[in-house]
Image 1 (cartoon, rainbow, N blue to C red):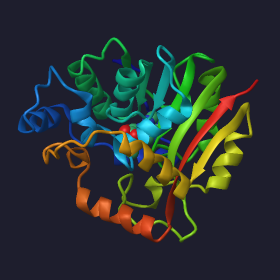
Image 2 (image 1 turned 90 degrees about the horizontal axis):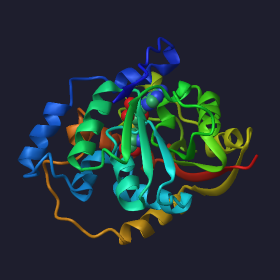
Image 3 (image 1 turned 120 degrees about the vertical axis):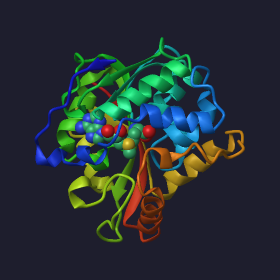
Length: 283
Ligand SMILES: C[S@@+](CC[C@H](N)C(=O)[O-])C[C@H]1O[C@@H](n2cnc3c(N)ncnc32)[C@H](O)[C@@H]1O
């Protein structure tokens, strides 16, 4: 694993401490054993309930990959990759060469374990680093990809500038993100935080303006119901799998039930909504 260690004392990056916690490797090995899976011969479809750390699971990654038109051998940077489920999916199903970057050491360790176990170490590189100071030269990737990370990052202009910087001309920035909805302020807890200093939501209009303030042109914008519809369509092409109660986001998240209930309440009250966006570097 490459490490560009994140030493942010910036209070606006306080949300990163939310993801701190005990080492995950043993926890994951234990969960895999209970689930009856061999950690050295993993199938990414078995892992999907556990390693897609965002709303609507694998279907959301599938839908975004189709919108972004990810092609074999394209260089994809997954920024805020969590434990690497979407990165492995893009490598295994789209043939992409993926760099999975995350600032949380324990997630990077988990991403390495699962990537090796899935036999994808030759196509997925795990890098521990900061989305606000991406450790890559300009124009290094065909696609910069984020899912469920914006809400944890206060300095969105810097994030968007970094995403645009590392994408080659003609390349794409692809996002599946949570937005502030019209229903009022967020109620906690949610899967990305316990209190206000963990969460930095902006509206769709604010995000779109940010994306278009530099060299990017938005080519796809599915906000609210249109994002849900696109993801529901993608979900229909995913074969149903028998549930395995040992593998799920509860392995990563303390107080899982309360956080998911908080998420459902905020969605129902329109305090948050979802967006899928693809922006192309047009210079
Ligand atoms: C809700 S998880 C989403 C993980 C992954 N994108 C997925 O969809 O499975 C948010 C992730 O953003 C990461 N993150 C937050 N701030 C970051 C930063 N400044 N740089 C890199 N990663 C960051 C966290 O460590 C966490 O893994």
